[in-house]
Image (cartoon, rainbow, N blue to C red; front, side, top):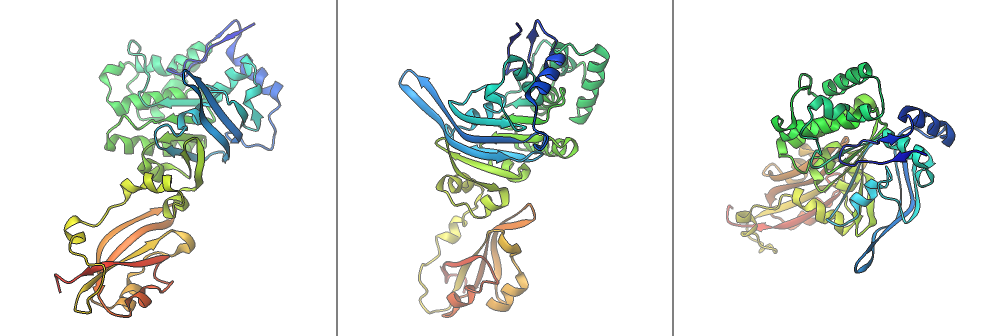
Length: 385
């Protein structure tokens, strides 16, 4: 009987007493993957996870039912302790659900035996926040390790490692040791190692959290390029809403182990419905400058003053700011004070704040549904009039 161990630090599945490639082949044939299910699809069906601790049971996930479309980039976000890591780790069965099913390519992975788990973990690559590279091994050796352990011929290992290093932008770094690499380069090595076995799913566990903003952008761009070129499914967890905005097709917001809300990124960002989502999005929302906010009055005295009007856009129906229309309704003296607009997946969402002359019919004018999805008068400023 074979012995199977999974080393989360290196994404390696050693197999003692059996050939890894033949084990993977027999697992695929014995499970009989449904032909109608796309490779890289994931489904959570009523998944629950409870940990046993010294203070009693701790529920990490409750009634998680959701589909991750094959070939998509799917983000999972939530506050600390929301259950993000627990959910991610059920996909390669580093965590086993207490109840419910996780289906990968239509197969319930909770029923898998050891050989089937070996095959699964070769189809599911994983990258980590802190890189988890072996400091005594070169870039080539770190990336090649999963193939070497699997018994892949040396020439094939050499060709495959060269291929993925070129893909992640590390060509020529084969003989470099991790200590000589920047943080972004180390993460690229981790990505190459996760890709070397040609997975159909890539799991990213806070993959950009240890990086500076500029390097984060480069890694995000790399992951988007990998998704486009290889067509694999990427599931990532992060606490950075900006990363979700830049890379993901769909997003799931977790709160205390439950689904708070989910949908396409532009929908969730444009019209967040749950308090947890609004709290997570708050850092992206620029408030009014303090000097301006301090001058505003909530009521108009009837004397000459400037009104600050906020127009909100959710991305629904293609409605977006039309400056010509705004000027036609509010008058030529209208100026843009602040813009916090995003274009996500072809949809414009956010808010636009304009300054215009205060008048008695202003509430009626800004209620025009052709201007925005919602509008309100923030306050009145008489100091500059």
